[in-house]
Length: 221
Length: 278
Image (cartoon, rainbow over all chains, first blue to last red; front, top):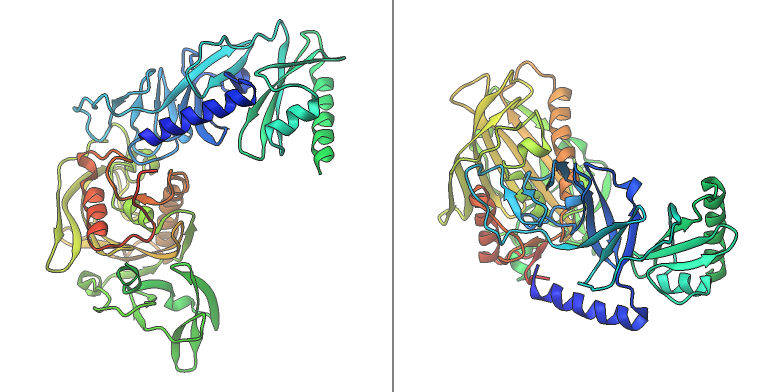
């Protein structure tokens, strides 16, 4: 990654802080990224590969193999490594390339590495930070994750519609004791990851969330 | 710079599949391709007739003034070969990315698993690459790779030898060990029509020694291979081919790709290329 990317990231961080300091962004439920799998996620127009090692350790990397630009989210997990599907270049936990199959005897230079982002698992939700942060991952206070919903509205509109100032985790309460985390994906869309009270019935909460989404989207139409 | 791009020959259709008139794109501009009483034609949006060449089962044209004839493949003219019109596949990628992928062997075990390659046979031995100034082409020779099933006519794994040739910026020719005829080369080509800088129509064509497979079998083998390539080509970031070093990291196995990029830059062929690291 070039200097420009870092500059862009720093700028993005400033903008985010002004908008209401979101350090940690939820990108999905842990159950949706089981051990041995990798999935693509878009966070604020940044393409990421979120993967879970065989031992269950989660990682968030830039979705691009430095070799030929292939999306790492199409790759495969073996043990504690992620490999690119194009040429099998293998990356270890710290993001540096550990093996190039075309040159089995070669020790890859340490400079070959995937861009990595801070990634934590908390309350069975996966959280990433686009820029280094001292903040703690949000605590859902005993609530359980229910599901994720894509919403075709910018994240600010959704927060406004929910009548809540933007933050990493917004506690809405109500009948289902909801708490939601918004993942801005593009300028025009976001994903809402929802928690509900531990004793709430998932199917009912899920229906309620769909209704909520429909209302948010139609209010803006 | 525009001449450097316009003055080349480009494939725009299969001779065997020409209709009355088909509208398509070439370098972002609309053209009409077809057959009439007198023969074949290509016209630009203003109705101006563009030059045509019929060769390798395809119709070729140029929006500029080509300074030389379309390249030839003498090996493909030797008798006894099956000439295979594979058809076309549209791919959302730079035409240059499509060519570069065709020149690459290190991906065989991972993208064409158990067909053109298989783990643990992943090593790419050193091979020869040069830009041949006298013909203005890129060549890679003495390329060797283990293949579980090198062609429809191949049984079991063999160490296959290849030569790669880039005779034009959006065309590549592969010469490959021919299982039924040691000493001869099968010819497999990739002719790419640049629709736009990030969208292309790929026309593979083959001249093979194979008297066992039917035409349909040879076509479907090659189509299957290219479908696997397409899943890569549509997921590379950026879509355009970076010509400046820094954006991507090559190794010794990528010597052909390095030479191809260097050659494109030298001849000023920037259509579908990314020049500044973004």
